Amino acid sequence: MLDTINQFFGFTKTDYADLVKKGAIILDVRSKREFAGGHIKGSINIPVDQLQNNLSKLKDKNKTIITCCASGMRSGSAKTILSKNGYTDVHNGGGWGSLNGKI
Image (cartoon, rainbow, N blue to C red; front, side, top):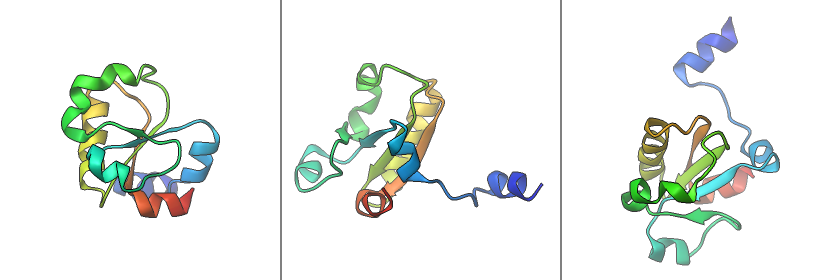
């Protein structure tokens, strides 16, 4: 019961390292310039303002996707875009630097 309540309010912790180990895609939605300045090794860069027009680059809608950006705001928007387009397992990883430390 407590797990259900925690999930409802978003208090559960996501094990990002485990998701990556199991093949999750890390989607960095910062600008190309920001991405060039530093990013998580192996991540894919599609700026959030270009995501809707580039969904074909993310072929498997059932694949786990972890979004990240500079602070978590754009990655939250990206998560919403993906979810509205039928992607079933999307996680907002927040800022890329913080996410990098968790994986």
